[in-house]
Length: 70
Image 1 (tube, rainbow, N blue to C red):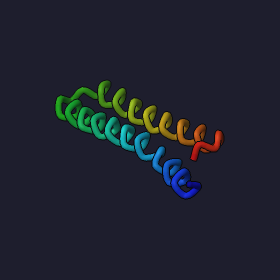
Image 2: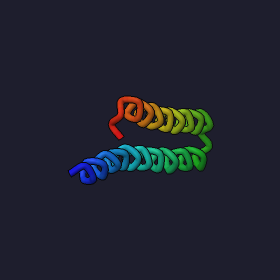
Image 3: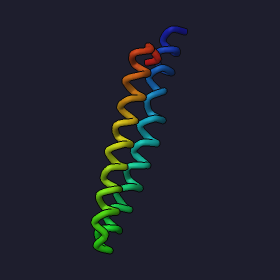
Image 4: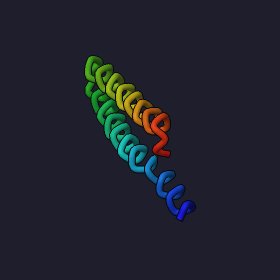
């Protein structure tokens, strides 16, 4: 039973990473489309959004680790 609980705790990290990876991929595609349209302001905004998503993923993972959820 303890082994099963440890495996479930380890699996809780993957949905967070999968959603974050999907969001970052979408934002990268948008950034390159804005670059082709020569919209520098939108490229910079998209780059900031990518950084914000990465930061939020890191904060969630650190928070979960500190609470002992995995």
